[in-house]
Every structure is written in C-alpha cells, then in structure tokens.
Image (cartoon, rainbow, N blue to C red; front, side, top):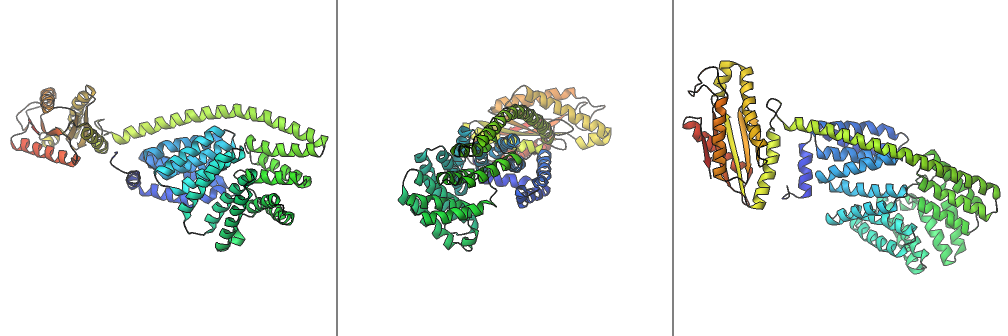
Length: 547
C-alpha cells in the first residue's frame, strides 16, 4: 500500500518468508565468492533451490533474490543472454518487493553487461536508472558505483566533459559512502576513481588537476592500513606513468611503467578494467615498446577467446595488435591478425544468430515459468474445497480496497455470513454432505462476484464467508443480501433443519460506510461480527446491516 515506505514493505516481505527461505538467502549471500572462484558452477544449485522456494511460497522478495543471484552467476560466466534475462526478471520482482538496493545494483550490473556487448545506449540508460534510484532513496554506495561506471563510458568514447561531470558526482558520493573510513575496500574504489579521473584530465591537458588526483590518491594509500601493500598496483602505476609522461618526467614514467608491467602478469580482471589495459598498451605504443605491446595484446586476445569474452572486448585487443603490426611493417602479422579479426567477426555474426534463438528460447521459458508461478499462486490464494479466495487473499484484497475507498472518499463494506446450525447439519448428514453445502454456498457467492467486479467474496474459515463491497450504498447491499437469502432456498436439506426449514439458511452481519482516514479493516470486521451476533441472538436466517 502507498502508506508504507519501501523499507517497511521490504521488511514485511522478509518477515513473511519461511525459515528455510531465510537460510537459503543467507547461504547465497555468504557463498557469493564462489562466483569468482575456479568453480562458479557450484553456486548455481543454491540459486535454483531459492527459485523453487520462491515458486512454492509465491514471494516477490524471494523471486527478487533468486533472479539477482542468478544474474550475478551468469554474468560471471560471460553468459550475457541469461545474465540480462535474469537481471530484467529480477528488476520486476525487486520493484514489487521494494528491494531498492538490489534494483539499483541490478541496473548497474546490466549497464556494465550492455557495455561489454557493445550496446552503449542501453548501458547508459541502465546506469542512469541506477543513479535515479540511488538518488531518490539516498543509497550513496550505488550512486557512486553507477556514476563512476558511466563516467568511464563517456571517457572511452572521448566525451571528456560529460565524463568529468560524472567523475565529480562519483567523487561526491564516494565520500558520502565511506566518510572517514580508510579500508582496503574503500582504497580500491578510490584508486579506480582517481586513476580514471586523472587519465581523463590528462586527455584534455588539465595537468594541474590530474596531479591533484595523484596527490589525493597517494595520500589515501598512505593513510590506509596496509594500503601500500594492497592497492591496485597495475591500475595506479599505469595512471602515474601516463601522468609522468605528460609532466615530462621520464625517470618516474619508466619506473611506474615497469611496475605496472610486472603487475600485469598476474592481472586477470580484463573485463572490468579493459580500459586501463588498453591505456597501458597505448602508452607503450607511444613509447615504441612494440615487443611489450605484441606480448600483451596477444596474451589478452588468447585470454578473451579462452573465457568466451564478448567480441566487443576481444576486438579492442585485436585492433591494438593490428596497429602494432602496421607500425612495425610486419606484413605477416598484419595478414594473420586481420584474417583472425575477420573470422572472429563472422563468428560473432553466427553467435548473434545463435543468441537470437537462445534469447527466444529464454523468453518462452520465462513465459512457461510465469504460467507455473500463476498456477501455484492461484492455488495458494484459493480455498481448495470451495474454490473461493482464502483468508490470506481476502486480507490483501480488503486492505487494498479500503485504501482505494479512503482515497476516493466512497463506500466500503464488509459482510460476514455463516451457515445456520452447520455443526448440527454436519453431524446429522455427515461431512461429505457438509462439504457439499459449503460448495453450494460458495457457488452462490461466486455468482454474485461474477456479476459485479466491485464485490469480492472469500471463505473465512469453517462455515464462515466474507463479502467485501466497494462503492455500494447500504440500500444496494441490503438488496444483495435479500437476494442471497432468497437464492439460498434452492439448497435443499433432506429434512427440516433445527431452524425450521427444509433448505439451508444463512445469517449475515454487515458494516458499511464511507471510508475515511484512520479507518482500519479490523474496525469493519469487528462491527460486522457484532451485527452477525445480534442476528443469531434473534433467531438466525436473516441479515443486519450497520452504518
């Protein structure tokens, strides 16, 4: 309901799930590092168990979690189709359960995925969606992450002014996220931010500001416990080498360049940091270190192919290798890598065809899964004997309808009815007959709701039923109650009942009024129950409406 904040809605969702579901979520969170291990496939069974649990419990929050973790898993395997599919599906449930943090993170992850496969427009759109959510709900961490990522996209596409705009925004939200904290996690984030911003400033010859970035970075490293041992060596030294070259300090430049080269031997995060690697290659091309360019380019070309990296990433390293062959006048290497580039391009087109089919299959699988969810949802929301909505569904519907009535300043009514002397009928004719009478009453109520979408009926428990009326005057409801009393005469009993009739009879109590601020569902149910009690005291087989 609109009166609840997103955090309250989320907490309500969390409270409603089973203990088993809570344990599964905890396992998914605690074992998330498996995704970046040598055996990421061991993580998928946890996601599948959580998805089964979500289907069984029909919890939007559990679906939000399951698809979120599956998205992270598929992205780690470079399975972009399933990664995007799970990310989009997860966002739907994250909105429903108001899991704002996961939604902001999902948008950010999807932004990076779209960039990796070469769809810059979707990348920007998703990162901006992450920023919008983070800004609205003051989630500084994801505001920083998304702003930093979007700034890198503008930087690599040489739109330096927009890049600096988002770098400044990222720096602002970095400080809001970490404050005075100087941890290894904050150091890694700050180093990435300062290096990217500094490289951008170098590109537009703002050396004074670029040097300030370097000074801030070095101070941060020195003020972080063990920072001098744990900072991202390759990224930092690539930036410092680039800055030293711009400042004309060749000694410093060579020192940082060698340190970066040594660190690159164990640096494997080429997807997230391909911009830094490409910048390092460009720096070596500028310095005519062609042997290093050749080795590095070929290493990452092979790495990309082994790990099924997207063509958008692989092609960037191929381009650098071809550039190097041109500069060296190496016709053999030029012919070899140009041919390889062309073959990869053709394979990419074939992959796109396969991915299209895979995306189609994934789409239909999602439809099948949603149908399965809907079937389970119907079962979970309806009474198995009568087919009417059950008490849990009633509570949800009634609360939402009351809120709508309050907003629209219109009538809201609750009617409670039960079968007169039902225990006596059950004992006299047996439970099978008793169940048949419950079904007959349910059929009458179902007929009533089918004829008017502003009337809702549910089985409350035992032989009790509840009707919810929206926008009905008391005269309207009295007429409907009288019609229900009339139609009940068609449900015949084998012999005259304790109430003195040869047919089933009902007692009804109802409360109806124009809903106002401060009204609660319990108030309506309580007064309707009092009205029902008064009818029973007067002899049953009748109805009473209170206003």
